[in-house]
Image (cartoon, rainbow over all chains, first blue to last red; front, side, top):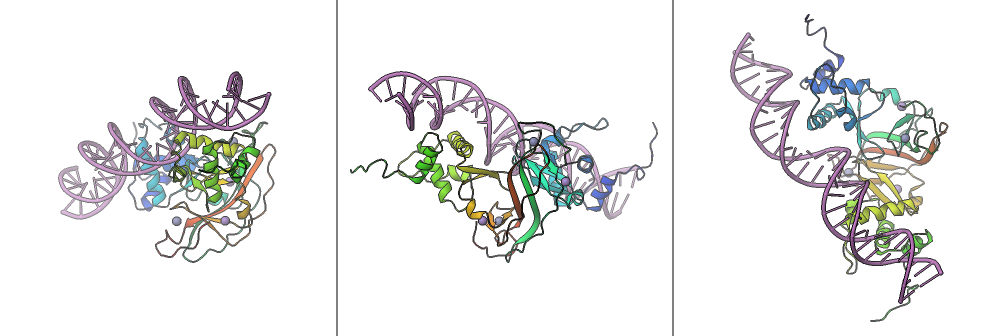
Length: 155
Length: 155
DNA sequence: CCGGCAAATGCAACACTGTTGCATTAGTGG
DNA sequence: CCACTAATGCAACAGTGTTGCATTTGCCGG
Ligand SMILES: [Mn+2]
Ligand SMILES: [Mn+2]
Ligand SMILES: [Zn+2]
Ligand SMILES: [Zn+2]
């Protein structure tokens, strides 16, 4: 069983985590890997069901919550609530890919779909308010959840 | 004890409910009254804590959920999720009052604040998608929840 | 290569939000 | 006033997220 040098097989997720100034743990690396690979924001439940990688034990439910919180706290992940009231997480940086268009959120399945339209500019805020995020969301039923059929590609 | 005619002391909420074609019950009237009087969308928890009116018993938790669902189903109330993932309900005509401007949602306290800016127009949707609602939301910390001070009036 | 310490984990128990089943009650139309 | 259906109350449950605490582990200095 050959063992390559540690630095060589270090993943980008590990480097990001180390650079963020928090401990590099298996849980954090696996979760950030999953977030970076995801094509859309993932819920806690979806991540809990992740395939347990190479022989790794499944991650504990509470630890997963804490791992996600820590990634959000150090700026590596973003947390948002979907139309059903469930939190979804995405890798920070992944949102730059979705910055130039707006999104459709299905109120039935919680799915997020990219639309071909530009987002409007942010408004001015009253004194004391701290802007964090601007979301122009279009809600309704996606093609798959409508009484009709055939759904386009997801976000 | 004088008893005025039923039609005379009939509330507007009762009329709205009757006109919607569902049974007029004490629960529905009380809840719709509360929603119509509210200055911002109310959560289930907030409504459960409502003062029990004139000698009326407190409304059952499950019944409150079902009353809210029925009001939404017959178009008298609107349901939306707040930044903390909790559903909030508003009376259906109340949103016309907020149709000509956009809103700021505090990610800390869940509060909704009116801004002086017009909402952008709705985009075109792919085939099979059913538009239900367009939301242009600005998120962040309100003046009260910011490290600083003094908060403006609420939605 | 070792300790040692703080941070992270695993587990149990809990809180909050929302749902389902079912027997009972109450609104409505005749 | 009756009967029929919709709505209610209660109990039990499911899903999501949190807290406390004992144990383990990443990381750093020696
Ligand atoms: Mn997108
Ligand atoms: Mn408003
Ligand atoms: Zn859908
Ligand atoms: Zn606030």
